[in-house]
Image (cartoon, rainbow, N blue to C red; front, side, top):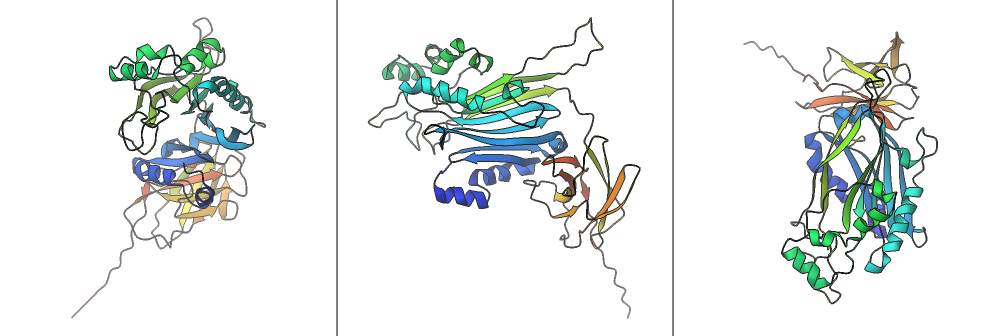
Length: 388
């Protein structure tokens, strides 16, 4: 990220370039940008497929600066805390202090970021009580003891395992009880730092930085009790994460780092029986008329006068990408037996063959809590009678 003041102000008013690029690629695949947070050069974005939206609640976003004794955001972490199908998940992107000699400082910043992740007013205030922590970023851990020539020869000859025992993060995980709870996939890809820009050559400058695995992806899964054959009637939960891939991408040359990606499978037993809001469109109607929407809510849902229903095209980019919306409190026309009805104006929508969705946004939960099935809006037809 460009952390200059002009870039920061521009990205506050408009979508940042990374969000725009990812939305261009992901929205045609039914992914929607649901949250983001930025702190100077750090950016964290969360996308989800639209069918999952009613089961994802954004609890909080938080930035934790650790530069200049906690007053400057050139180092630190950004966090998105969410509730996923009833489970608590925290996602952290971090940038830790650089240089070989600052390993103790890196570990100190790691602990400080973790200690600052308390979320007041929620059932699970401490991050260590969350079901899953995903933690990644430029952690800046280096390879100790081995000289530059030896490290480069190991990389050249693909003897990466010879370097693992001197990786500072791997060493720290053996000593630190808390860090030991975080898992990481095998480092089967070459060190991702430091490269000459626009090349695949390790640093040829005067400094000749020793290659290192600075860019890492960790996760911590809370231990869960499994059902016992002796107590089959006790309530159980199931939440399991497995990593499918962990690799770097050598084809990207715009940075002195190579980007790293991790792909995971998450299996869970939902703790929610269904969405808080169920939405139905009431037809028939055409583009010339207002659309009647019916919706029902679960008994434990607390509505707000500031709740609204948005009409979106399938392939929407983010939650503000609606084509029309209606405040449910101001436009309610009938209710009873837990069934509510509102009208939404669709007169200004251009004629199109696109499919649409309706999403109910809860102001108190700051999240979508109900979504309709995709549908089409019938086009207008004009019949003209002519005679000779």
